[in-house]
Amino acid sequence: MAARVVLVAGFTQHDVADELWRASPESSLVRHDLSGLAEGVVRRWRDGTLTVLELAHGCVSCTLRLDLVPLLEGIDGRVIVHLDPMLEPEAVCFALAETEVEVEAVVTVVDTATWLDDATGTDSLADRGMRAAENDERTVAQVVVGQAEFADALVLTGEPGPVLTAVLDRLSPTAPRRLATDDVAALLHALPPSARRGELDDGFGSLLFGRPPLEPAHGVSVVHFTDRRPFHPMRLHDCIGVLLEGVVRVRGRVWIASQPDAALWLESAGGGLRVGNLGPWEGEQDQEVVVITQSADPAHITAALRSALVTDEELGLITELDFADPFTDWHEELEL
View 1 (cartoon, rainbow, N blue to C red):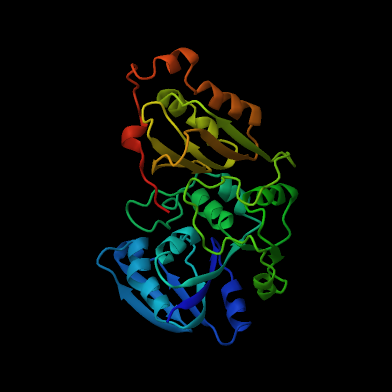
View 2 (view 1 turned 180 degrees about the vertical axis):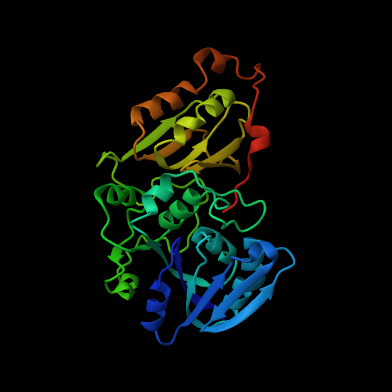
């Protein structure tokens, strides 16, 4: 016995989950409030009934592992899961990946009045009084971009402007969209065959999921950088700042000369950056970095990345050179 779930994410208050629940009378509605998580307290509602949970170690992964996953494994039928604003649906799907719970859809609510500023800003969750634990260093941008990028469908709180539309076209190109005033439940019937439905990227798949438009629109561009030679670790580190200003999203699978056998994963949103280790290469080493820009110069980004590659001379001496590597202590195993 296991549930079929519709995950509803969003950084601002909304009633989309309630609307989907009302449109499916046989379903259950589960909602978590993680505002007390740092103190080890989680509040959970199921169909309006409140349960207060006390966790010895207050963290998002504990909430998923100790409460949400067992709860969903014990329900037979559709469940609408209204995710706390600080939760990214990809992390939830990662927690559900080894279970029989079926992800029917991921729906994300985008606040058209604030999303673009949040997605390109530098505020941390701590700045907003929203971090999930003492060591939660995520930025607001990382959360809102991750919520929209992983969505199968988007609900917009108002008419989007041309820049926001251009960003969403490139960030989540296959997701159908509805205004919150429309029939939101109809979104679940409009999902394309290519909808992700909770499927996780192993890091070696295409970084251009859904084939977004590559041509510029309203100042929004996609940079697709590829190369067959490694990065010099210090020069790549020095050019990281180029990937953080005027940029909505960076996703990259990179190869650095000091770690020839490791495929590294680079990801950023707004001013937040994360580097992870994907393990050994499953094919020939190469670079693939995708950048969605809002105001940054695509040519400048391409030139900066190109200048961070090893030179012909360095490539010829690559087995003899001792590269200083700031990524050795920085990166950690990729956390979804």
